[in-house]
Image (cartoon, rainbow, N blue to C red; front, side):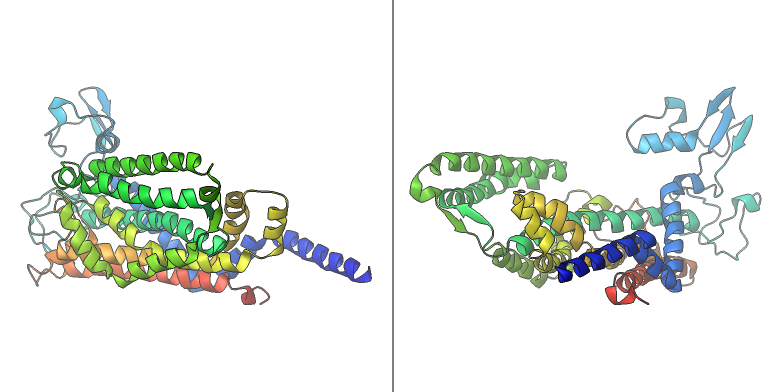
Length: 437
């Protein structure tokens, strides 16, 4: 009895300490703040995110506000709606020269150039060269390329693409990695039990779904105007076939022998899939998959990078789920009769996020570096788009145009370094040994 009271006192002290400190994540925030390098990296990341989100209003040849013929216009905001497909330009503004229009009043972006706007009077002009501009307001502060396009505007547009690539890629990878890692780690090789009928019908359904969704439709996929639309149709057909076979298994399970449940070695199967994925070099996979798309696009690159980046997350989630699945709070949730998936999603998985956050931070840096490398090689990215890798590649055409190499290279270097330093800061902050320091 004395031992029980002492245990309760220790638990009460721990809860009181947690309330005083604001909880676990408050401790993590405090520990992260002690790492000055990581903290400043996070602040620089905020700047990059701000530029990515509001880049269209920072660098644009269209005014932010203009009064034209007594009408109040917001061309930069209108352009955002056009890009999103929400509206269209009127016929008289489709090919308008926004620089030479007779405004009654106008407010322009801080950088009066877009990433696609050419200034043919200033081709291959460096930051310190004499430029043919009406005033310093229209100076190209980081120089121009072979078509007279402003490098600073291109850098800002490239920031949006880099941030989008990093976060979208790791979102896709995290979604897939969480699912497979949770199944492998929590259920292992003996907790997931399925009936013989369900196993047989899922194996047959998988084979039939692959055949009808992808083999039969291979011609339509290869010659599609929109590859993603055809792939979406194939995935939907794949899921429908699997669903039909699973519904059929409900009737087969009524037979005693087919209804008998057997353990499924989920951990072994998923780990073999992960080993297969890691055995294939990512660059080779991208080089083989990108030619399947009729038109190059950054979106295609993001999806493909996400599809090959999930094994690392799955491994960490699996390891954490193996650690927590036998803890007291998991056993208590199971004893209360909660379903296995509810236990996984609401109790086990939230307590396995710690190493995954670190993996995602490093993964974003890797995704940005991979996209920059593909852009530099001219693979998978629309030539009309502007990325840091494309700007870097333009420097090969004229070695004296040093600004085309230095500025994009520094942007890639600093961004990747920032995410790596944030990852190292999270590693230290999430280390329980640091908590008492």
